[in-house]
Length: 215
Image: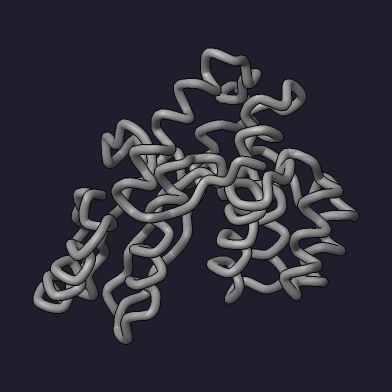
């Protein structure tokens, strides 16, 4: 049994997008399993309108993320998503799309999350739109998930709610104040909260080494 990293995230979280390269590096390391766990931070009661003041706040955060990680935020994203005046901050639809992937092609969850993030932050697409999300999944070669999302029903919604509840429960148990958040689970049954700064820059290599020793 490999050591497992539980990665708590929200698909509309800019810092989670910034952590993407670090998460990918962890997932690529032989002997480490990285499990994606959405928490629904910006879904349901956490959803909110995208007003100009909050959009301006996000721009400043995005600039910090780019400076730290090199992850790009395009002008199209700023124009369409932040200042377009039509979109909400609501990760519910994106979480539903990821649930469709989990049910149909679970090994492709990392690929799907990366595709959704790129669609938002680089291409400036509206990933609060079910139709847009279905097309993104299709374009990523995840047709079964795209079809499942397009035919969304109570079973898909219930599966998403169970998945999100699991994530929120873990987040509370860890006393995490937000996302991204990480928990290491070792083969011996140990559970450890990891400082998410380890996801950014060269620190991820030190984390990989530490996980190897913990295992």
